[in-house]
Image (cartoon, rainbow over all chains, first blue to last red; front, side, top):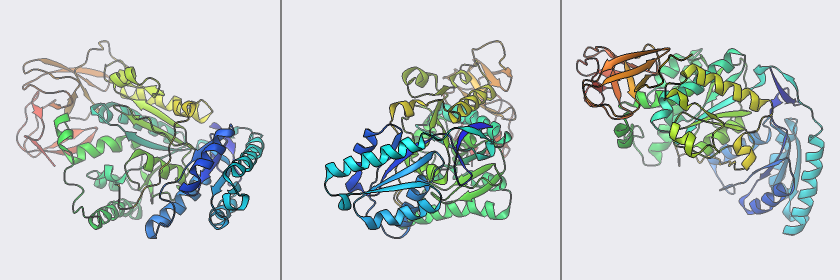
Length: 385
Length: 93
């Protein structure tokens, strides 16, 4: 059980934010000003959004619609250049039951007037949204993304196994967990497939990797497995590709794989449990997929330190590296560095992470929320893996 | 939750693992304290092993599975004795 904000579609948010989303890069500055004017808003800006074609166009539509309907948002302000783009996005968002308003530069006229009107619209929505109260919610409505970045020798032997134990505790209590980053499961895909509840799910994992390898071949990279583990990895002590990948996969816990979804597709936690989303592996692109999929919280393990978080999805930062706990205390919500000094077990580290995950779900702030340093980036198919 | 001494030299992620990861460089002949689940076991290093590299906890026959994180990460390409460095020279996919 957790205390979340009930939404009309039956989901529950762990935050009650008004999302300010720029639909084009040319209005990023205006959207940034509007969000900066109104407390209770979070900003998502755009890059490469205009004139995308094919798969990338489809991915962007799913990413924005998905982020806008994340349970953590009480409402959405779409900031854009012209009315056509606003309608394309506003209709499906409204149909999903989310409060949505558009701020259209060419309809209002002028940067300052657009900022002024947009600010008033955002303030009115934030005021309305602030009236929603937290209520008791079953953990079956909580979906946690798991992520790692800035990995080092501590990641596979301390932080990721501890986060995996926290993931298991959440799933045993009825919640769901989403692992992502397709390139990072290469070499461990047979083990992921073995964990699948049925053949369709098992082939979903194999297909996700095959699709990524095909995109890489088209981009002129014949074998993206080659060079992994890298010379640096080998110097650091990793020997095989399976060893490297299993160290990353470990953060998802050990439960059966219930389903595989594409980048930015909704993760419907029915039944609750372990899911995989096929995403690029850089953290901002991957977390944007998780946010669009409906994850309300992300558990993020880092070795050397990594400051990113998604603006709409509280991101709990974890490290198992004692040096990082010393140099980046302002980035770590939970340190499990005691695992490497022998002070705590992996299981105890996992329990500490799980407690923080539940506390953040109930309203406790993460550092990246306090700093407002979140960043959303929609991946580009075939350009990053 | 934790056993007495906090001074450990290596960690086995899962109690079924037959290798552990060294937390700092160890010299050949050194006694290595390995945390494995609730226990701390001692293995004598047969080779010098750099930080982040693996030490064998038991005898692994040629062709046998090498286990880390409770999973198979590859197989031994030659017989491995307890305390030996496990890396590209004796572990393959």
